[in-house]
Image 1 (cartoon, one colour):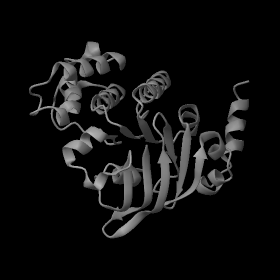
Image 2: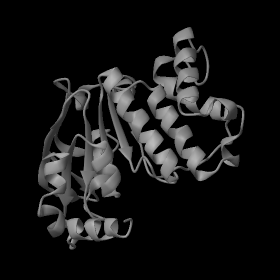
Image 3: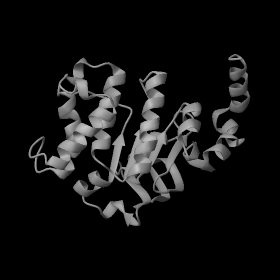
Image 4: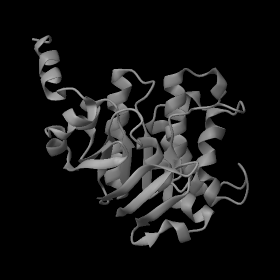
Length: 251
């Protein structure tokens, strides 16, 4: 279980998120919703302990602030929106980096277990045939799947995803979300993902929180949150009416 208690975080001495509280059970997918600039990415960076924060982040009752960095990398994995390619590694080498916290050196001494996890992840994300390609030659959608494969290869207990379906076409969006849902259930982990597409959030999520101006304004089962008037207040539009109007065009 992951629990966030009284979390405050921001930049240059100014809080972007304030007094954030929620829990995510094992096997559960939580969607973080809200308009641009409300603090969604800041929240993920805080939980991953990439930026400083006040409050507590607990994983299975353990405060992550006291966890050594290598152990933290085995506990929490974050896939951010920024897919920057600094060095032209192969797909296989990039995914192998997800096992760094378990190995004795960079891309060295991979165990049989490491290799099995890497190979299995590549195959399940349909990257096996591309394993020897250089990542600076890939499309945005394929590159997104490579970085996701690297994240899952960490075999973390908590997965943090910032717009996980970004750059993917609809077919691969659905396939990816189905795979993530099964992965979370089978591995008894929990997932916290930022979503802008509310249809994908409704399809994927078990629970949701809505951030508005840095604070949580709704927290609960996904169907309850998406039917809430809180969404209209956060986004400044009657989202339910808009969705129904759009669906009418498919008849």
